[in-house]
Image (cartoon, rainbow, N blue to C red; front, side, top):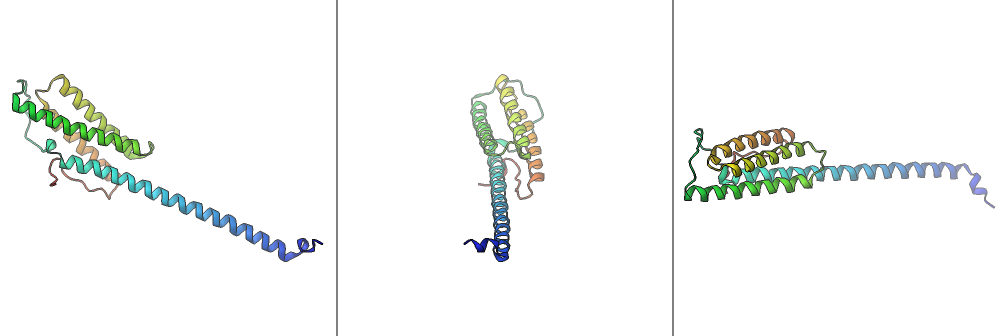
Length: 169
């Protein structure tokens, strides 16, 4: 009645079908993993490039000579400029936070982005206490952010760096 179960062709076909099924499923899984990983890397690079471009477009980060510590109170024009700088710094901080939240915390770039975020918080705290010397503090922040940008570029060679405050819009 079930004579085909004893047939040698049946078992050899069954074994080869099972092997083919598992190998095919494994290859499909490997392929899906590769596509997902490539998508995450592309998304990470896009987010990092947004931060670099934003920093490059920000007039607040145009380099200046600085140097002399300022202790005099800001006049009305300087206060208006200080408010514009602060808005730009807040926008950059929020962008960094959004990108960090979109990434896997294990990514190497997250550590660098967290450093950038902390550098910005330190600047905000320092200028909240004393805004008189905000330009020198801003140029110090600029240097710290440039250092972080260079380290991000070392992680992802596809990133395009711009000098902060110098990117034409």
